[in-house]
Image (cartoon, rainbow, N blue to C red; front, side, top):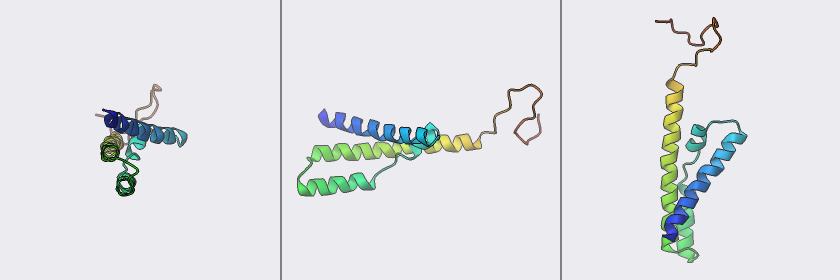
Length: 106
């Protein structure tokens, strides 16, 4: 169970760090999720950590699970960014204002 907690904390910290970075750079949550994907560094940490005996196999597994979850979070963010890019621009809430959408009205 402690390795599951470790994996959950790593996932939460990964998303939180990228969320804060997105706020600082004035980007939305989808961009933050898109930036979470990490596999190379965690895989390297596990390989070196196990070879040097500084992490246990359970800890290595937790790190890899967190890395795989980051790829899932990235997929969610990229999907949201793609959906947002396909949606037409928002119509102005000001009565009588011209629409930002260049398509003719139905």
